[in-house]
Image (cartoon, rainbow, N blue to C red; front, top):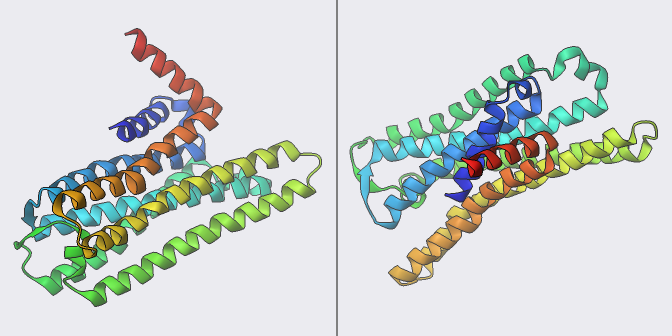
Length: 277
């Protein structure tokens, strides 16, 4: 609940401040946090059904799984886009001020991100649905059950997702190295490059927190295989879900809210207003 509230608070802070809409990084940030917020709600619902061993139709399960993958991919892509925006602003300022990273371009990039993030999981979901055929079949909606239907499908999906996340991490690392070199060389604009380096560091932390949830599924599968008792397994599921999935999405909006001056001021006013009313 706290993670949902923090994400919602930052998203609303940006949404109700039209002046922030003209700045590219806030558009990407609001999209990323909105994805995290929706993903938290969907994942919590799915995990509640799984904990209580409640079955649902296979079609509904793979639809929820597709939405989860869509939101996860879009969130990570937005973090990479924010990193690229800082890279262009510092390393290619002429192109940046010429409109390369303006609101119109940001809207276009966000449209591409959401379209690409939708196409990949939808493709795999369609393959799995065609393979299974029994879309009305009742199953417990957990990733282990979905992966058991087709190991080849699972392997191909894991390879593609692995390549995506490795390339995303390399892009952030490359940007960090470039800005580090510029910060050391710059003498007339050291402050701007140093602030950009701090911002990219923040994006790297955000990305690392998001990627923590990749370990949730294999860790839960390992817990199942070691033969824990039902009550202990359920408790372990809750701990793993909170530590690897909920906690990173709680820290991300807090980090951005404390780091960004404009957001911090907006959040303080909103909290003060909520307390006073």
